[in-house]
Structures are given as C-alpha cells and as structure tokens.
Length: 280
Length: 230
Image (cartoon, rainbow over all chains, first blue to last red; front, side, top):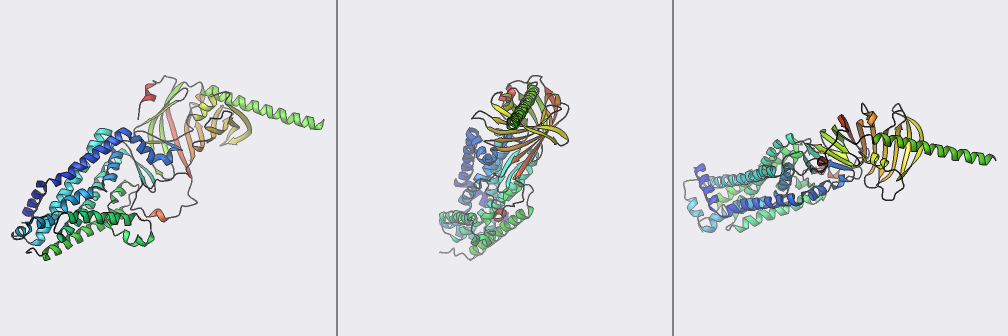
C-alpha cells in the first residue's frame, strides 16, 4: 500500500507544472554559468589564483570541465533548496488547501504511511533534480570544456587534484549533496504538515535556511556551540571530498547530523499529521 | 705619495674586477646565444606552503629571444619569473652593469659572484646576483630580485648539456609569505582551523624543482607551438 500510494504521490508531483520549474531553472542557471565561463572564465580563475599569480604561474588547461562542475555545484547548492521546497512544501498543505486531504485520509492507508509515501515521493523528485544537476555539471560541461586536473580553493590553500582522482570524488559529493537536499525536502514536508496553504511552508523553509546560513557564517563565538548542529552547516560538506587528505571524520559527522535531521523532521511530520484535524 | 699610491691601487683593483665581471657575463651570454631553440621533457615538483600538488610531467619549449611555453596534460606550477628571465636580461647588453663580488666555493664548485644591476628604469629585474662556475662558464645559482614577483633564488645543476648552459635540474626557491586566501571564494564551512594562530615557525619559502631530460637543441621549433592556447 505504501508503494502504491508513493506511486500516486509521484504521479501528483509530475502532474504539477511547478515540478518542472525546478528542472527548467536549473538548466537555465547552468547554461548562464556556462556562457559566462566560455565568455570570461579566465578572469574568474584569475580571481581565484590572484594571490599566487604575483609569484607563480599556473600552466595547463585550468578552466576545464572538472573545475566548472565544481563552480556550478558551489553556486547552485545555495539555490537548489528553493527549487526542492517549491515542490515538497506543497505535498501535505496543498492537499489541505484543495480539500483533498479528507479523501486521502479515507483511503485504507494509515496516516503515517501517507506522510511516508509523500516523503518518499519528495525524495525521488529531489533525486531526479540531483541527477539532472549531475548530468549537466559533469556530462554537458565536460563535453563543452574538456577534462583535466582540477584546482580547488579552500581556506587552507589550493589543492590541485589529478584528473584520474576526481570522478569518484564527484560521485561521493553528489551523494552527500543529495542528503543535504533531502533534509530540505523533509523540512518543507514537516512544515507542510502544520500549514493549510502552499506558500507558508515554502517561504518558511527558505527563511529557516537563510537564518541558519547567516548564523553559520557569523564569526562570533556565541554561536559556535550551535553551529555544528545546524543542518545548513553540513549542506556544504560535499566540498570535503575535494580536500587532500579527505577528512572522513567531518564527513561522517555531517552525514549523521543530516540523517538525524531527516528522521526527526519526518517523525515530527508523522506525529503532526496523525493529530491533524481534517474534519473542519 | 703614499695616499696617491693607495688610491691608484684601489681604483685599479676595482677596474680590474669590473672587467672580470663583464668578461664573465660575456662568456655566459656567448653560451646562451649558442641555443637558438630547445624542447625538453620536465618533471615539475612543487613544495609550496598553501598549495598541494602532485608532480607533473610537461614539455618545455624555448625559442630565441623570449618565446617560452610549457605544455602539460595536468596543471603545472612554475615561478612567475626566473626560468628565462636571467638569460634574456643578460642578453640585452648595455642595459645593466656588472660588479665583481669575489670568489667563493659553492657546493664544491669554485664560483665567481657577479652582481648585475640594471641601468634602465623600466626593468622588472632590480638586482641579479649570479654565482658563475668559472670552469664551465655557467650560472650555478642566481638570487633574483624583481619589482613584480619579489625575490627568487634559483639553483642549477648541469649534466650533459652543460656546453649549451642548459641545466638538468633547476630548483626555484620563492617567497610565499604574501599568499592570502580570498574568503569569499573559499567558503569552507566545515573548516575549524580559522581560529588557529599562524605558526611563526612555518616555512615562508616554497620550492619548485624541475628535472629536465631529453633536450632537443637547435632542431627548429614552429612558432605555432607558442601561439597555441592551453
């Protein structure tokens, strides 16, 4: 029954025009970045390597598909949560707004399974969005810009990764990025359980992400104790796969915190939906 | 009379030493000018604070007077200045003066120190201190001070191409204390090292070692190679 209902929920998602906004916007954003990189990518690279270029010169194909895929991921990982929340924030509250929630609850399926099937359908949509991002970032970009060694700039310096050592890092980083987006999906489904309209959960999800991101980026000690528990802090942990050496301890910590967030948020959504008054 | 003799002696010795320095530079230039072009396989190892990079294989092309190109499959890091700058600077006769710095023994090689100072205003090289192997007439070490790139120390080890003054190994030591990470680009949220104070004992020098093999000298190199984009 859970699988059947999940299938139905997924059909509902793909029937809504807003579900294609995410894919369309993602494609448009990547095309804009690719155009910018093709037109003036070298100046972007100069900005990254400016501090070193007074003394050193970097030779070889720096502006290659691997680096541009990284730039795309870095730029878009901030905006993709909005595209995810646009669809998943509507999953429960949309039913309440349209009045179909009563009919849904009369089906021979428990309320817990209804929430779980919506969560799974949202997870599949998020996965499609992530796979589309991966396809554009890795396949299309590499086809346009070619492959090569990759320069990664982080706060501890420059890491130059060899071409053969990059693909598996992207694979792992997309899995972690997916987990981060899944957390956004769970958050919006959780908020959706509390709301009676679609806009509220979508805006609230983005508001929470913005608030947590600002807290995470503020360099003040008063927030240090809570920063590590904010899911937004761990949304960028996909970057850790491009460190050398890779700090597996940090990555595992991020994965655990994101998984715990998912369980908690879906759990709250289940409890709330089970107690939800759908008669009025 | 005694004073005049002393002054003359100092003047003569200074003139003599200037002549020696000029002669040495002329001998170096003569050797440099023997090479019209060359290509060579290079293995580039960079050990620079704040940069992590594995050794890279590349092919280096050079053509007189100042055409220089590094072709590598990967990303190769080279010093901004110092690879061909010394030879092209010395080739511009009349744009510098050379001063004798005396004899020393460097790594078991008897060397003459020659300090070269540019006489033109727009020269990027401010000062070049050369250790010249007086037996082979080749530069074995250079301390290069430039306007744009700070100071670079270059050590040369010669092998079978010593006749062309082409080294088998070059070690560049560059100053890296000015390196800073742009925070907006390196938004590294998981990093917890931001509160750590910089280690005063940490090396502020970076080295780039280039091992050069399979020289092809004066066989002609097409200009197209230097025009090609990476």
